[in-house]
Amino acid sequence: MAKRLAEKYGLRYISGGNALKALALEVGYKPTEKGWWITEEGLSFHRKRAKDLQFDQKVDKKLMELASQGNVVIDSWTMPWLLKNGCFKIWLEASPEERAKRLMKRDNINFKKALNVLKEKDEESKIIYKKSYGFNLGEDFSPFNLIVDTNELSADEVFHALCMVIDRLYFKKT
Image (cartoon, one colour):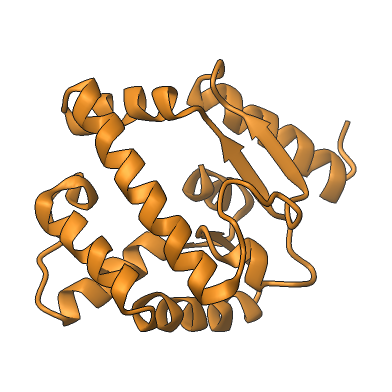
């Protein structure tokens, strides 16, 4: 969604996940295949991040530098808490079951595996961000300007809803 919004509004798109993959490459992982995050190697890197917080802190420092240049859309779980002013922050909510269905479709895996992988990644991510920054991922929504429940919406419906809000708030379009 962030990539689509960046394209529509002529902004740079920056992916926190891609930045983490670049770090993974630097330390010997090979995050090249589609769905790498849910492979055993991807999960291994995720566990390593939980033990060594400097991976995420290094990425977040770089993302904050890029954000300070302006005119960007950043896809990151941490930036809503770390960036303070002048940012429009969106949380896209989906149930674990809906997220598993989407992952199943995207990465061609079965539902049970998708649900288990998401559960493991979510639990470890919560630990990483709580230890690093003190916030509760998926529980503390205080930094967000907009929260959208995407469970019953297609990707296009979510995109159009976001554009409608952005257009009305920033471009005064009705």
